[in-house]
Length: 112
Length: 114
Image 1 (cartoon, rainbow over the protein chains, first blue to last red):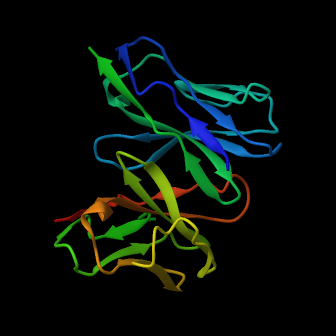
Image 2 (image 1 turned 180 degrees about the vertical axis):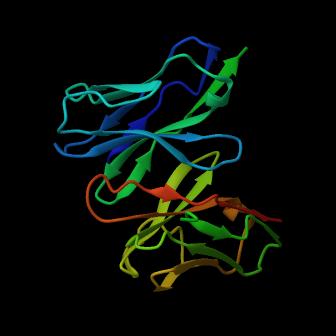
């Protein structure tokens, strides 16, 4: 079974600074999708960014970007110009077939 | 679009009682997923449907759990009888075939079994 590992249970960043959240995964597939979801205290799961494995270019969505290293099976999320509203749990997910396999999450604290 | 709708948002029940969680997917979506989130196990898939047909229920913990999708706009997850270890947040998500199969999540139901 595919596994997703987020090695940082908690991270902290100052407002306006940059932070990188790590994610590694295990798979034997060559074509797949990776996602980062944000879960604020409201518990709503919000898609932040997605990456298609066959695309070498790293995905970017405004202040959010990824560093996708397919050979290393690494998929990190970079948040630039951090804002107080970025404080949340962040989950990395791998799409296996039709369902998602999630990591255990990283709790991001943003300090003023 | 209203997004994925789940009800109730919170449910508190006593051990042994039957619990029914409800979900209305986004109109036009043909995949529906039920996930459970706990501190110990994180987010895990319970079951998913395609065109109202259950495709993979290998994540359903035991026979006390059952899920149905009688039509394209409604699904239920039932626990009978409930146990304290079933306490969790239950999410419903839906997606449409093709592409990345991005899943849109509902707000979740927080279930507490006393």
